[in-house]
Image 1 (cartoon, helix red, strand yellow):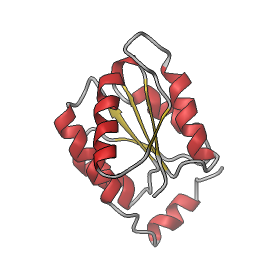
Image 2 (tube, one colour):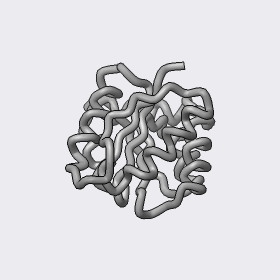
Image 3 (cartoon, helix red, strand yellow):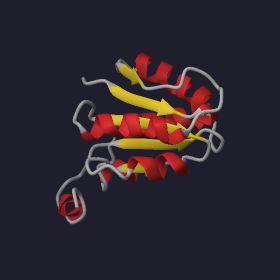
Image 4 (tube, helix red, strand yellow):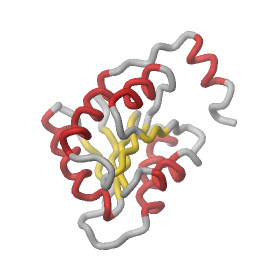
Length: 144
């Protein structure tokens, strides 16, 4: 099992630490791209690190967390090899994998709590990509 890349900004730091612990408990190795605390930082710096690792093939999956998840989603989806999905509910997490083969999960640290995030992470990790017609749809826009 390859490690999962994770990063946040200051607003997502506490949730990032909670998710890291969950991933370790589930048996995943975690590549933490920072930050190391709650001091104000610029979210693009960390989104670029995680998305870059996915785009270069160093990681198969990643998790990004900022205050709302919006900024990290925008940053990550600038990379050709990335399909980042903002998921603050279980249905979105499931469908982002099932139909969109999302390789980065994005969550809002100021939007959801640790209980819901744990369910979202587990759902996202355990849901397979269906392929078929969904693969054909992804091929229409991936690596444009």
